[in-house]
Image (cartoon, rainbow, N blue to C red; front, top):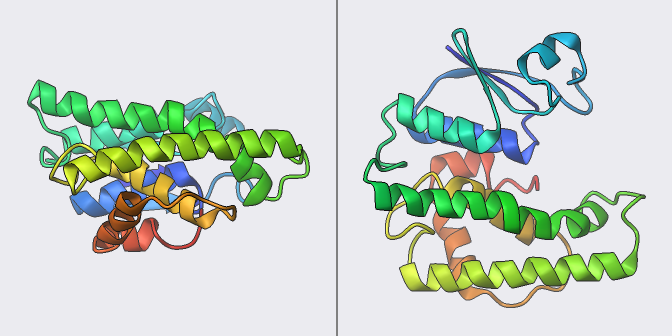
Length: 207
């Protein structure tokens, strides 16, 4: 059976849990991370020297980096409907997954830590404002894309890309600040709520 190491409130762990739900994969999960077993434990570091969750164990195969885990699970366990084999379709999925991990993820970092996590070291007002503005800029890009497809980020069908993007949208709505109206993103948020995996691991109020 698959084993997932990481606490269930971690956005990156939740990606993997949601992917398992979409693929109907059974798994065991162990709590690792802040508030649980420390990822600086030598046994954990032997699995992931970066001391970060999640880590996937599939028999004797060990993998870290959440988006890499998603791709592996889809490729290994019959997830072609989520991660197409056709190169152009797959590239579109990869494009949006990589965009979430780089551009979108970086934009929200300071604002999220300040406003949602109430981090005492993220209290600079100018940095918060700049982060909120940058975050909104990238969310407008997403809104335009979703308005064009009328459905999901890679096109008309749900794919792996919607897992990290969907969790990012949850984080957007759960972080308290004045946001621009993004109707296509709001409709997408509601659309994802029709999926069992998202109800369990995504739109649950835990940003």
